[in-house]
Length: 507
Image (tube, rainbow, N blue to C red; front, side):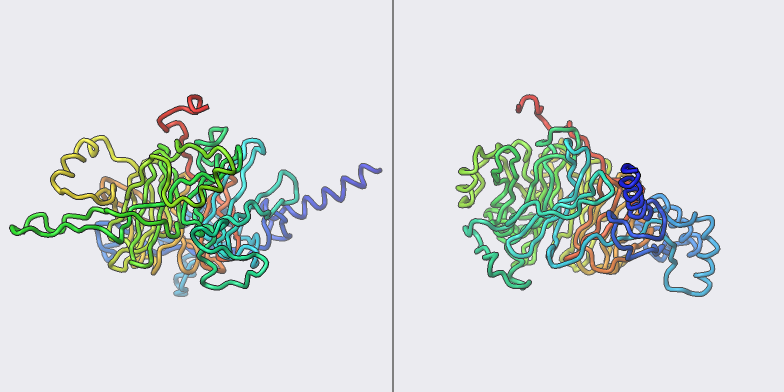
């Protein structure tokens, strides 16, 4: 009897909190929260090639929507099969409805909303080998910055939100004045300058084989640097402080004979990091950092070569002294990776081939574009690099001539500013748009890209960060809110054995 008294209430609570997450539409899940969106808006736009005009599309609206429905069913959990909802699609189009909606079996749920997580800039998934599961880390720019942790426990009750790191963006007052937490006022524009920004995971510092496991890398806006949190002693090892200044450069002038005109520029001075909002580790151990400098209206992606091999500070005492550094003390070079006519960068995400990445950016012409940039030069490109440099006699971004425009998002998606994106293991691109998150299907043949805008998931607020977790949930963050939706696809799987040098040698 005592066993039944304990077991039956526990079973009832478990069922009432988990039935919804298993597909039922009633009840409330403690791990999912309240459902806020229950339908997906299918796109009626056909393929858009990077080399042809949109007016040359020949697919009918109905067949295109049906095709996009089939693609969406491979990504999300729809309430009905696309065969069953074809009639509904045709009826909606005959009625000239503005959008074709399909119901979701697993909708978008609100996890948290409140001032406690104000100013969310970036997020990442981190795997814990000891726990046997992962959790979210969320970076907050408000005040002195905080990094929050959100996770679902192994039982029926979600662990939820917990504070992972306090004063994550400003601690020393050496670079920017930190705020006194006791007298901190509500959000003001000037309070958003000293918090934390981009975050990433240094997989090389992990104990397992997961690309999502390792030391936390954090952009400290209030300290003007990027650091690595050393798990062994709690020290903060500076990785990047000074970068080449794309606002101050020597431009080669046209000579008397008219040759070498505007061939390029050489950056001769450095500057302090501004406010990085996106960072990415390559499988080869380099750290890529996207930074925008509003003072001159330019942006660039920087590369810290072999960042995984930067030696850690050996103590907390050395970490405190490092706050006063104006330059990085390690010998690993920081160069300009890409800076071709950019005024703003939204985010970067690894391609499933792990040979290139997607980037959202705004150009000097005012266009918001989706770029695909190689993260390494191919062998034939490496062989010709020296010859090309001697011909052009320039020093610009390492990948300026190799990047390709996948889509003009200003024209297709109505985007005026670049925002966050994330890529799934099957290559689908989740892109933040003014009214939610659009899903793109991208294919490439040679130098030609073909894009399908598959569908858009409406969100109550403009997304500021996107993350695909190992648990196959798409996490969507707004300024002070967390949402998630169950998907059929997980994050990009990246190998961890491509870095030159072995962990065994290091240890």
